[in-house]
Image (cartoon, rainbow over all chains, first blue to last red):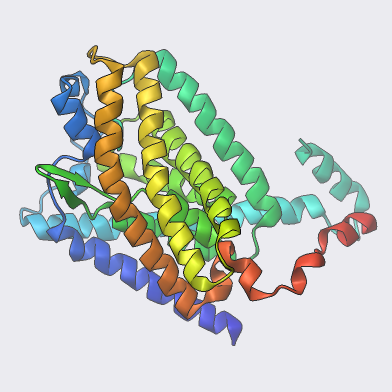
Length: 121
Length: 232
C-alpha cells in the first residue's frame, strides 16, 4: 500500500511538473533574467558567445519548426521534464546500485571485499 | 543566473569546473551511502520539477525577471547530496536548450548546485535549530534559506567575475547590482520553495528529508549501518 501511494505521489508530482512546463511556461516573463540585466547595465553582455547548440532543435526552449510560440515553448518544456525525470531516475537508481555493489553478498565475501576496497576513499 | 560562454575566462571556468566536479563527486558517493530505494524516482521527480519551474520566469523589477534555482528545495526534499545531483542534472539537460554555456557548465554547477545547495542547506539547518520543531518551521526555514541561497549563488558569480571576468566592469558595482536584483529574485525563490515544501509536507511528510526528525523520533538512535559493517 505504501508503494502504491508513493507511485501515486510520483505520478501526481510529474503531472504538476508537466502542467507547469507545458502550459504555465507560455505565460512566463520574457524579460532578461537578473544576470543578463546586470551584464547589460554594466556593459559586459556583449562578451557572451553563442551557445554551441544555439541552432539546435530545442534551443531557447522552443521546438524547431513549431511556429506557435506558446506551443513550441510548452512542448520543449514537456520534453525537458520527461528527459530530466528519466535521466534523474536512472542516475539515482545507478547511484544506489553502487552501494548495493559495495555492500556485497554474504555468499561471496571475496568479491564483496574487492568491491568495497575499490570504492573506499 | 545561467552564465553563458564568454563572461568568465577559461582558467577560472576550469577552476570552477574542478569545484563542481568535486562537489558532485562527493555528493554521488554520499548519496550512494544514504539514498533509500524509493528515493531514486523521487529524486528524479525533484529534478524534473525544478526543470519545469526554472522555465517560469517571474518579473522582479522593471525589465528584469528571475526564476527558481531550486537548490534548497531539492536539499530539503531529498537531502543535500541528492539535491546537489538533482540541480546538476537539470543544468546538464538545459544545455540541450542552449541555456547556460557549455564552457560555463562548471561555473553554473559550482554556483547553483554546490554553493546554492550546500550554502542554503547550512542556513536551513541553522534555522531549523532556532525554530520550534513543527512542519510550519520546516517550510519557513526552507523558504528563508532558499531566498538567501540565491544571493549566495549570485555572490559566487561575482567572485568568479572578479577573478576572470570579461568586459572590465568594476567588481564593486557588479556585486551591488547582482546582490540587489537577486535579493528580489530570492523572495520569489523563497515563496516557491516554502509553498512546494508545504504541499509535500501536507501530502507525504515522510518524503521530506529536511523534516525527518518530525517523523519518527524513536528511529533516530538506531541506524542499521554499524551492524551491517560488523557482519562484513
